[in-house]
Image (cartoon, helix red, strand yellow):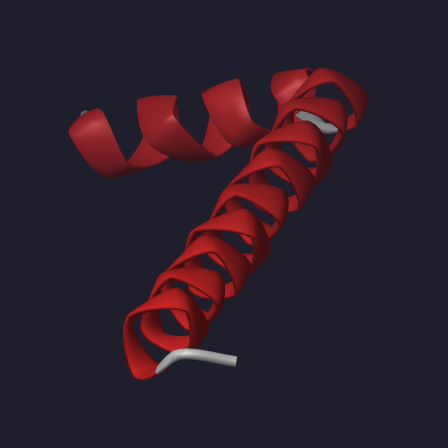
Length: 49
């Protein structure tokens, strides 16, 4: 394999991993927020006032 092709493959792999992690984090955060929305809002109200 040529060095440039190898570098491109590594870049693609890195981007794929980062994108996957972002999607996973987004899904987890969204589900966590939906499940604990009332508790989070109560906490924010307490902090805000």
